[in-house]
Length: 75
Image (cartoon, rainbow, N blue to C red; front, side):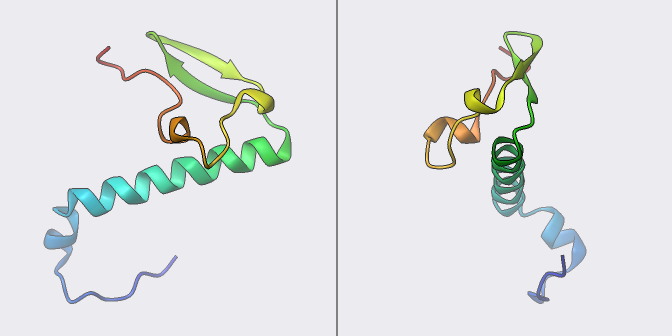
């Protein structure tokens, strides 16, 4: 995917943590929805363990939980 040149240097773009975070969340949301649509399970991290979610357990894109399907590693 080609990004339009915003005039920012590579160092400045790498420091834009909000934009990077939004891009990563969108990518995860898209991947989860692709798995759900195609009927494929997906592995997530929950309570310190890897857990497989069946396609019907994957939250819909409109669900708030779609951005965070599992616990954080620090929890």
